[in-house]
Length: 133
Image (cartoon, rainbow, N blue to C red; front, side, top):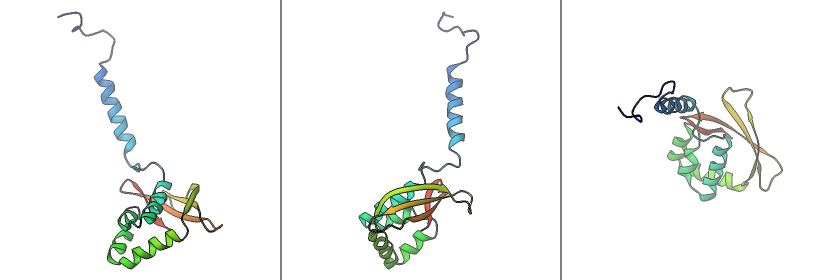
């Protein structure tokens, strides 16, 4: 056995730390949303509307709504028109919804109006989705 092959007394194998780091990364990701910020769902909804992309808009809506949009093309066109009527200017505030655990309220400023709009978002399948607007 050469000097480099001899186990070092009192030192922990570096592989142990790699495994420990991997386990910590896996555990910390459980139950978390893939998108890290709730407002990203609202921004994605407005970006999809700006492009007229019903599929992308449906992808950020909570379950039930995408299927309804797919069945009725006029619903999708109406949603896109409604969102484009007052485009997103900026996200003003994100706060926990005190009525519904796990949900967040995203308040935005819209172009062409002084009245802010509040969206409710929640994690669904590890992604933030718009549940109400």
